Image (cartoon, rainbow over all chains, first blue to last red; front, side):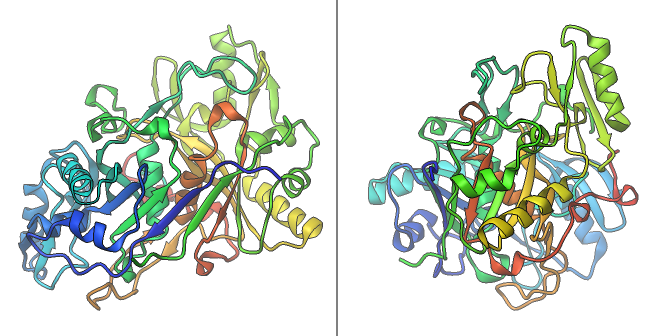
Length: 234
Length: 234
């Protein structure tokens, strides 16, 4: 019976409904028990609400909806019925430019944060300033995938944590050198966190403890955005 | 300070190098501490080795490599240099038909299991028979994504666990009804497990404890494979 060091994933409950001007780091420090080396995972919707990225929308007007989606896109990749797949100015490819029409008041829509890396850094710096803890932060959003049914949460902003860990050159179990294995650990942590953040239960923050310490470093979500030149499917 | 029930993810260490004919359930029961409701996550490579899905390949011969990749595919979607994106007979879209040329002996390549759902059921039934534990099983493989850098682990076979959980009709936090949120919890659990299964450390099995009990049901990975008619990018 031998097991690795465990990874522990917990949702933070009891957080308020966030409003423009709220300081996420304060709410997190007040509600979550943190230690150095924790990864704090926050949904983009909580960030957007605090940052005032909520706009009025007449949901019964398909033209208004479409215009809002296009105004948040640099490119429309595909359309089918109500589904629009776009590329955002951040370089993310997802449905509806990441605009969320649920979990906001009727007549409102929630846009993605303008600079999710900056949002992540602000939370990280805030937690350090308020409580002295050295943590990493991931801002997550919920993306579909072209060939697989169902959405999963991925990282759209990071602070203090690698997006991609390059295992190139690491000897494999048989002592040979692996050629190319870049693992997107930020997305894997985002996915793990989603499992304790059910949409109906108001859990917009999760704490992931036990993440490999070698993953902690300065970074940007830009390292996860595939450059157009490498893209085979756009 | 209020946190949700935790999710606990641990890798199983000390497992042997698997060979054709080895019984995975026996090895897992011998090395892992299990309880009812655990999700047992096993890499496809461990499964393929036990099932004898290892073939000879002259790695210095690009034609042989290409022929092997195509023999495991029903369709080639894209080619660029050495990279080939194919659709397998299971319906998975990934690089090189999922064939793994690393972590096997020189001159050998590891193919995906023929029927990963069946492999998962066999492990689940084996654990029940040997130790009496009611667990779910996920067989994982490592997939790239078209617009994001880095690979993540996803489910290619499942037993006793939902692939996709449909939150359609669940009231959101503001009491309105969500329109469509199908979450691929099997892929999120696979991603969480990968974080404790580093490629260089021979950890082909992880145990995920604390998964929402409503996710446990009879299932097939077919529910995660997007039908061609819904595909916008093939």
